[in-house]
Image (tube, rainbow, N blue to C red; front, side, top):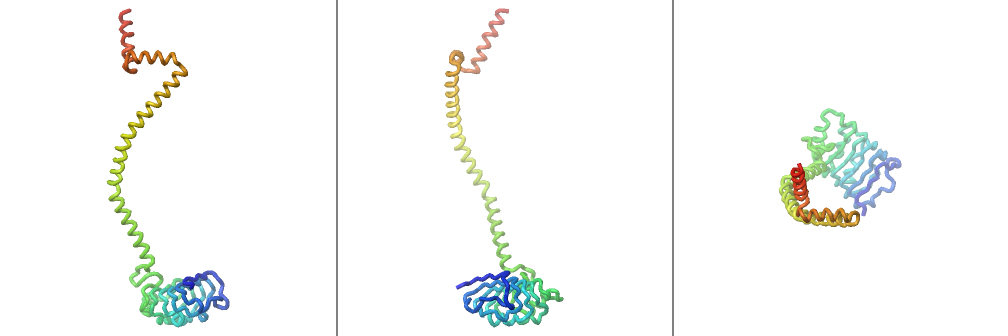
Length: 240
């Protein structure tokens, strides 16, 4: 029932992976990167296999086996192998469903008109080394870009629509906060004044009584002080 199998960096025995056999009938993705694979002759029949990763091995030919044993391949990665000429790649013509082929870091990429030659030879493929004939990236990268673009668009829309709503909420909060704030400030002032009054009662009852008397006579502290100073000033003038 295994559908995906990754054997990267394992070591092959005589060019094959031990234990990989026809019992993996449901396998859709197989990765055997850097396993020192020299041949595909021992590859089991995997009729449901869609993606095959064979990068960084030492495969130089025998690719016709793929069409026989993995006829439904849509993606094949042979980058970093020993593939040198178009004749070797020609065997992939029988992979009718193949859409993406990767030959990056193979000697064949040094051939003149390499890309045009491969696209002409394998007309069923859409992407070579991650790009199509017009140098557009393969679907995975495009999908990522589209998702990023959609996210950016959403972010922009939020930015445009966001400020008015935020300001309205802030205004509402400010209005409510100001009403609550005044009440809270009044309560805080009352509490602090009472606490101050109690402390003064304990520490200096006489002083507080005198101050309280002055305040009662003059009605307001600040104006009381001014009024209190005025008679004194008048008294001094009369003495003079």
